[in-house]
Length: 66
Image 1 (tube, rainbow, N blue to C red):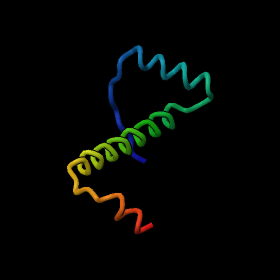
Image 2 (image 1 turned 90 degrees about the vertical axis):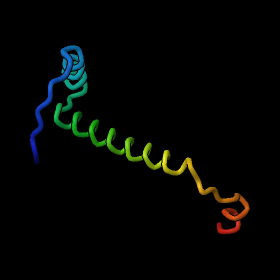
Image 3 (image 1 turned 30 degrees about the vertical axis):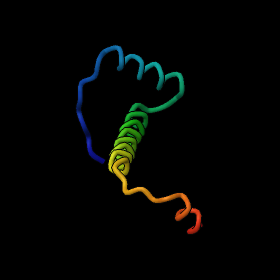
């Protein structure tokens, strides 16, 4: 495991503290999951942007391949 250090807004830290206490979670787990989700979303968005330009496949061709 690697350690990272980053400053966050005091209000965000308080919200993280409250959330973890209410749900019995460790901050490390919440932060790791949040980063992983953000990275996955960013990759998905990059793929969406790449595919927006085409090439497009006709529905009839897709349907025939099913």
